[in-house]
Image (cartoon, rainbow, N blue to C red; front, side, top):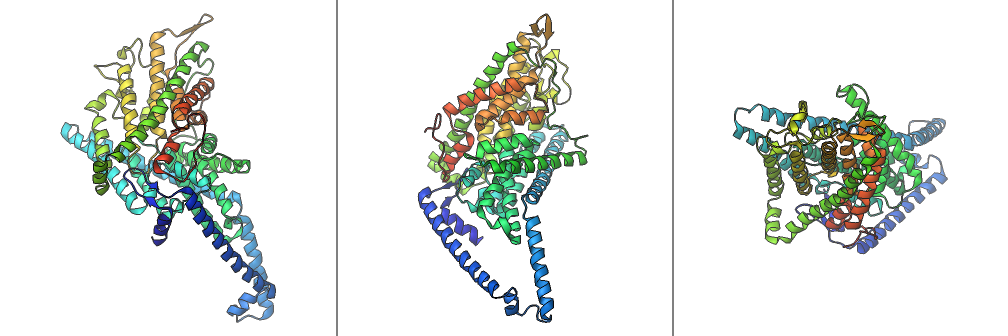
Length: 582
């Protein structure tokens, strides 16, 4: 407790309503930190010099001075000393190897990811059980639907604020700052790890439009930091602080890899969002740890009988012989350009909400005194609008994010010429059917409502990310374009006398990759999509859309992570270039 307080005072960390922020200039802080590290290094060197001097006097000089082992004769003492030194060297050479560290990191993160997903699934099932058991009374259904997420979000916010306020938010902006060389010690403590895991589980279990990818990058970095401290007990390379930075870079890849079982996309995504300069020698560490973690994560799903075998999280079954026609490429390009504008708008809206609340001095002062009121009000608003018998019936409000994404990636056409009755809705697809409106109205309402809800929900002071909500919104937009193409070309595209029907699910894949790439300013979302769906049939449309979306978004707004860095006033120098201006 005391140590954390000293760190916070040294960094002048100020806790605010939505995001914390720093009030000290980077230059002043850097000079103080450099002086502290220099003084600490001199003390360590003096201590080591004394140890070496004692060692030179005699191999067992320290042991003789302490009187251990006083009951043994000189030959026995020499034999035990030699064995001890050899055992210590063997342990350091084996336990201190990168392979062991990366295996432990991947295994630990796979267990954490599986446990968090398991608890989230139980929480979401409990909400549906409460809602379904009160079908005789709409008012009681509303109370159950609204109260449950409000309680979970309020608990998450309160628990996080009390234990470790630094666990609030994504964590990627902080890791981006740490990997640039700035020391933010309070972000890599055991208390922050506990607050992040428990707070994230409660936040996602509430059903709010929040994500887990960003927080898991932070959680993986926390695990790497704690493991490095444990490994340093054995001595060896982990006493070197520069090695910790290399392990944190690998941990960022593990966080994405175990979150979506996407090791390749995880490595590339972590490099894009956290690193300006990447050491190639760390490349294999990221791939090894992320692959091992993703493998264990999927094995645990099979062991728990969630899956029959190791497969993609959102497996699709698009046709492989002719997945799309060249005449559809302009539609995919439109998805990319529109997603670029949408991604920039999402980042701007998120920042606008935070700045608006901060400028309202009276409201901000009142909410700072009642810290749990803001997350409770936001959750109440979102839950009310998604209530299935209410407005939620027009926007598939009863579906969770995972269920919504599975339905959006379906390769069957939902409607022909805008008539919803032409399709036989089964299972979760029934949520998209409404007797009064067709599927196009439902998709438009879903996109518009989820867009501003996600931008608002990500400002709640709980551990949360924005990748998954944006991913689902992009899939819905792509699905809307795909259904429109299917309505305009009900008989499919004619190519050399052969008719190939439109596959709206492919458009959903393109939209998901494009919008998430536009918000995060990454191209690796294309690879993540391929690993999530288990197919690369739409590789060309996905790459075209993602590149166009990035080109548009980067010219209008910074990435969501750079925007949060500016909001929190982290000691970080952002990139200067096209699109990076105030």
